[in-house]
Amino acid sequence: MFESAEIGHKIDKTTYRAAVPALRAALLEAQVNLHESKKFPVVVLISGQDGAGKGETINMLYEWMDPRFISTLAFSLPTDEERERPPMWRYWRSLPPKGRIGIFAGSWYSDPIRERIQNEVTLKELDARAEQINRFESMLVNEGALVLKFWFHLTKEGQVRRLKALEEDPRTAWRVTKWNWDRLKTYDKLQDVAGHLLRLTNTPCAPWVVVEGTDDRYRSLTVGQILLEALQKKLGSTQKQESPVAPMVRVNTDNRTVLSELNLGLELSDKAYDDALSKWQGRLSELVRDPRFQGRSLVCAFEGADAAGKGGAIRRIAAALDARQYQIIPVAAPTEEERAQPYLWRFWRQVPRQGKVAIFDRTWYGRVLVERVEGFCSENDWLRAYTEINDFEHELADSGVIVVKFWLQISQAEQLKRFQAREQVAFKRFKITQEDWRNREKWDAYQQAICDMVERTSTGNAPWILVEANDKNYARVKILESLCKRIEAEFADRPTNDTSVPPDGKHKSKPKSNKK
Image (cartoon, rainbow, N blue to C red; front, side, top):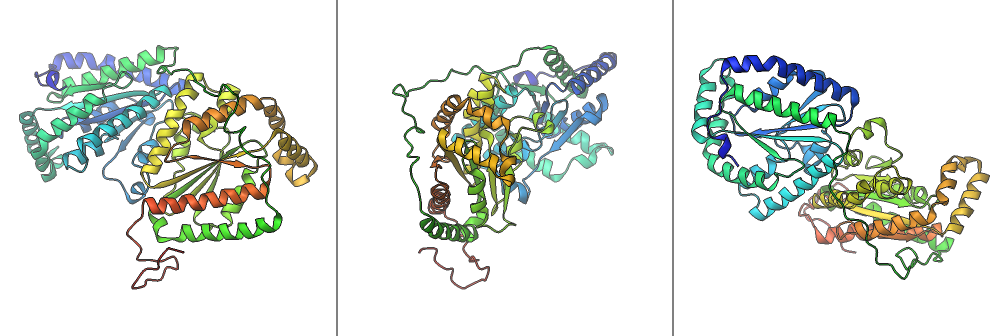
């Protein structure tokens, strides 16, 4: 992929000076149109060889455009906070909103390239990361983003000349360090790894642009013109770019579903409930104080029919936890800030650190439930959301997050009974709205959407737990018991070696056994 960037591209000074004023004016005009329309965000990746002009290009864009509407995100090795979350977390939270340009100096490509050069990952693992990146960038584009990826290339000899020239100029000598010269030793391996990764991630929705970095004027004009053409084309387009998605396929020709097969008559007496509640709340308290949990985190996702009892179940979980350890995240319609970002952005922001618990009251599944049934998104949007959600949960699980998902199911008759009861109790009237009554009219559509959701997103890393919730006692105990057993299973599957500090916080010469 680097051949065309090794032929000695150059722009003479006269041609450059003649072209720049018109280019700058057009870039500014396009940037103003972008900011005022807020039609889409722009993600610009600046990558490549040391000394190939990455920093100069970023400075050039700030000089030629309005810096108020540009953000530069520089990424090096992850911080402690970032290491305690999935690798993509720091990139998700840095995505620019609609109307702005985000320039990434270092990106989601940096770590895979570095790890492969240092033999920390195999070629097969690198290929898997490339596929993950392709799906991420495809999601960005499908959500409306303009993604531009620039790789600045130098030959090995050209890089040596470039570094020497920078080092000899008093104005730029500070930019060349021993680290840069040491990195030159890995040039050949970087070429192999980068060439392989660029080839795998050179997709129709987010292609790579390889730019020769030897001549500053050529590099600046090339990047400026490509950015301008891409902005003008997307600003002038009235169609949303979407990847083709196959229509839904169903197999329940006998009308039996995972919901119809639930036994909603299951009950638990008050006495049995009190005993079981104490037992499982105590066990949950022990599990989240276990040393093995300090290297993990927990995400509890609650979905269910209106009035199914999500709030009551969440309160029983919270009662077993230290208030400093958990956060309850209620999810409603997205705010203006959230609508300016990709759909999953607002959920990525809430991923907990290690040793913490995040409880979501409604979740990212709104796209394949409410948004699907109510027509708040296109069919393409909710059809591709299944894959995007599975990717999201896989990344969480792969980084050590325990993802536990509950669907609380009640019958139509029980829902009606609870709606009517809420209208009669003063402190519960706020829970019932005209929207709840209107949603009952779409019961069948929601039931089908729920079944599709369970079928397409109940995975080995994050299976759905279907809860028979007509009886609140039974539902709450099942949720607590299932949660505890899931954490215990995760501890067994992925034990940690650090047991030097037992739950009481006191160091002992020999750690306690966690076996009962």
